[in-house]
Length: 333
Ligand SMILES: Cc1cc2nc3c(=O)[nH]c(=O)nc-3n(C[C@H](O)[C@H](O)[C@H](O)COP(=O)(O)OP(=O)(O)OC[C@H]3O[C@@H](n4cnc5c(N)ncnc54)[C@H](O)[C@@H]3O)c2cc1C
Ligand code: SF4
Image (cartoon, rainbow, N blue to C red):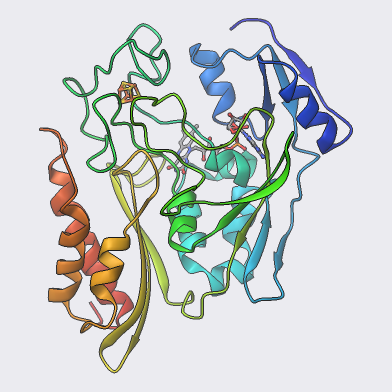
């Protein structure tokens, strides 16, 4: 690890100026991802700008009936918050499935959203990787890609986004509040255009639409009348301390056996938390039956281009979607 400086600026403006003015500087929150990457040699900042004391750390209801979550809120506090557990169970559950108790005590909301992929080649500096060293190649396509993307990838990168929280926030239409050198702005976590995350295309090294010095200060969830009927399911190789092989965040509004509205996002299948809008369109106004839940999954997966060792995710996603929506529709399964 190369030597680095450590700065605790007095305020957010100082933190933003420190990172904006120095290409080797980066924000430090809980450090649970950044410090690991520094130890591996994947990240080599020359200055860590500690923002842990500068970020809002409260969870507050908004006047409209949603929630505003400070970027400094620790993952464990978010998962334990009574308002989140009762009003947005999909979010509480997603956060609880991530990492371990100790890590969730350190990890922050802002840092969770910006954690880096767990692609093995990205984490191994002895291997080529277009995301880490642009233009060096992508060994994952012909190598170990069991856990990598079936949707949204490109010939240049098929990494998956590792965050569970981000999948739930995508389903909930959450918006990220940012302060930066160009002033404050709000960015949707996922949007048809202009969301926080970028697909890799031919620049997998550019993962978000944030610019140097942009600091996430809060996440806002708009009101959703049926958010109480939501859930998160994560399929993983073991039951703790493991990233998702596939995950699904869902919220469902059913009346008289017909879907009035649905929210669906899928994790660990794409370089970004994948909002399943094609599936949502199929579901709206249709019978709340396993047949239609399966058709919705099929509509989303029609765009998939799996690699030889991760095609099993197609079946897995379909099965999880059908089972979860069935449960949310009250089929008692
Ligand atoms: C063993 C292990 C298992 C894990 N399992 C899971 C899992 O199953 N699911 C899951 O979702 N996660 C998992 N994680 C990841 C963990 O959730 C993240 O490491 C954590 O959420 C990152 O938050 P942090 O505050 O520690 O971020 P940091 O490590 O401090 O920062 C991460 C990145 O975000 C940037 N950053 C931080 N805060 C801000 C901000 N406010 N504005 C702008 N940039 C910022 C930093 O510069 C850095 O680039 C696991 C981690 C480990 C070590
Ligand atoms: S999938 Fe992306 S992160 Fe993984 S080796 Fe290829 S370019 Fe690197």
